[in-house]
Length: 108
Image (cartoon, rainbow, N blue to C red):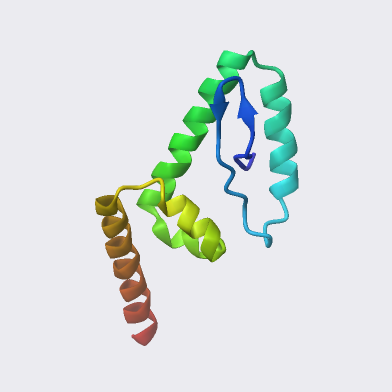
């Protein structure tokens, strides 16, 4: 199952949606599957699940910042706003290293 966080308020928790790229054909199916899962849970369980998914998503973007390329400029800004300036600098350094790696690899 693909995970797609939706911009919804569940219980007292408002979670931000970062949709998959429009090139992802599984986006709608992932949203349907997540909604089915959420519908079976109690509100406090929904809050816990959404917080966990949000934390996992944030960690994924931190570890693999090149995934941000799939989002529009405004969505990138919204995602980056979750991170401190120091974390953003680390992400930029990781992105630059990855870019340099692929440039070197393709040059050889």
